[in-house]
Length: 324
Image (cartoon, rainbow, N blue to C red):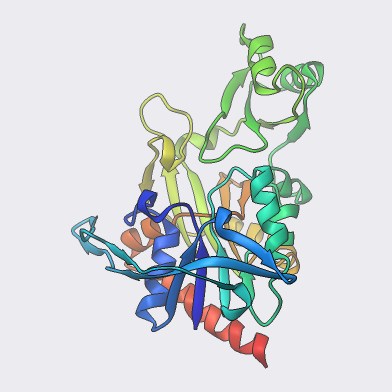
């Protein structure tokens, strides 16, 4: 198969961490041709989605002890060609968030990629699935949550709680998440900063004390869980995100986790969201990550698995079905 990946500049990727690299490696190992492009290299020509596609050869990482050993150089990029994305068997949209206007325009271009080429995740699904708001459809499995830009609404919510967590709707990797108590003297300022003086809504969730024990990332493939990793806050940091220094540890997928996955699975499949990372704290779903979910490298290292190959094997079967 020919598989295209829309990514951030490859020189900026961390082969020991980035799931995009794990997927590209797996595709190459399984005998497929890997192509890469970037969002700004997408075009529409004669009603079709085109891209500047460059073939790439990867030198796979290896695990030595408890760390990844990264070859230098770890990739070789060949000259690109402008060609229709419809010539690919699959296209992975793996540009990191935030979902900006440019990102949305890219999804409109990807709408023009027609079957049997499979786009993962569906551009329409990405547009429907803001990574904070999407979870609000599953009220039985999320903590008590409000979304507002009204300071008084936040005040009234917080009066019934000991503490809450504020999240910008367009944030990523823990950026801009704040811990707020009902007696915080900075309340007014924090809400003003978070809502940009009342111009943008924010998510406010009841703080879950279990967050101290970790924020579990579960990877779902076609609505089914295939692996998990726990991200534990370190030092004085209350966030467990790896991007802000969270420590990763091996964990199990519990019966409650499975209940949550079963709740989400049908909706994810219906929206074409095939490769997803969900975040669970204690017994509650907190986020659904659909743009560029990560975690495979950490799960593989801790569990001696090869989740990238599992994803590509699924893609092979899915592609065969698409063409039938």
